[in-house]
Image (cartoon, rainbow, N blue to C red; front, side):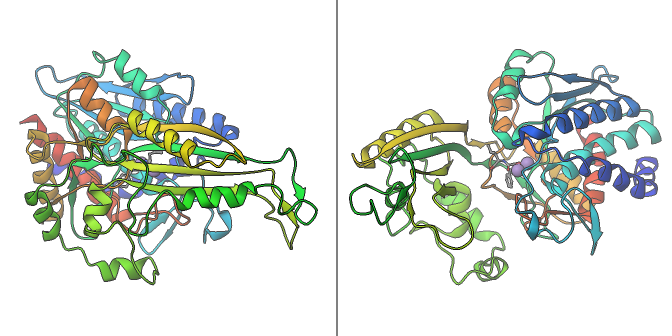
Length: 453
Ligand code: BES
Ligand code: MN
Ligand code: MN
């Protein structure tokens, strides 16, 4: 191991330079004009894996390609599968970025770029740990497989299908996913639960064209007004979701798990201040950590309709719409929630307009055991790299493949997150701490050793 950790330290700068190459690629999976950029990034990764010593291939899908790489040079040793995603969220609103989103810039020990923490900086650290084992030793002590997808942020189902069709190829003993954040700075963490999601869009249509709001106002329903009223009926004043049956399958937290949450050093006041909020808000009867990790939500992600240009324009818009996502917890089923949402929207749509409802994506919630061998080894690796004990946490976000891995491969993933809570995922000025990147590489290199035992 000393040779491996030495190699990691000596190559620190080059590792960062290589991460920069990835970060310069605008791999926005939601943007159809970026299709070639995603292909270019996938091809780059295939070459990179091959150069390190793995066998790598690009897998075409109806959407963006998957990159698969493996090295099975340790017959008899366990096989570890690493997952990551090379696609990123859209960078807009661009004007709020202090440095360009696809020109990685170092400031104060952080690299600022879209995708730096989510997820390029995080999956790449395992690639670099593997490289260190190849170049400074006689290869990794375990068999390794990498699956890096290009559609995580797009909630597509091509990866799920690929996994279901290739369970033999992907067979493994352990799965490591670095795509979450630590509980706090200086607080290495392992995540054991993620929320699911159902992502919908509703489009309310009124008259066949935008109308003069004076000439027609008072005789037709305004789709934007109607949409607003409908959205207001998604919750009551206490933040309870009003969709019929929404909470039917929600598993309440055990007293023990509530106590675990309460033991974590969470400071609501610090949290409030970090978001510049006058007050926090959430469903009554739960703590903030309970709300974000173990309670379902329903949130408007965007609203459109009517005139948004400069000055005023007196119209009744022909249509208005909203993108709405619901975060799910065990044992809520995305299909059931989708049906309940559609039924509720239809119920509250007044007869004066038409409504169209579209499903954009679905993923199941997941919780993994906190005593699996891999998770125990991951704690040990964190202890070695950070010199401090890791905490167990859940996450409020979704990584659809984690549930797929559990169901299709029968392996619970270890969510070994090296992000920090202020990394600004999906926001302007996303960053990754370079110290976390470096320590993550060390942790991963240790973990390969520990999993070989
Ligand atoms: N890495 C995130 C998920 C995440 C972030 C989990 C922080 C826990 C803590 C992932 O890239 C993500 O953003 N997923 C999407 C999935 C959706 C588009 C289906 C999400 O959660 O919105
Ligand atoms: Mn991610
Ligand atoms: Mn994301």
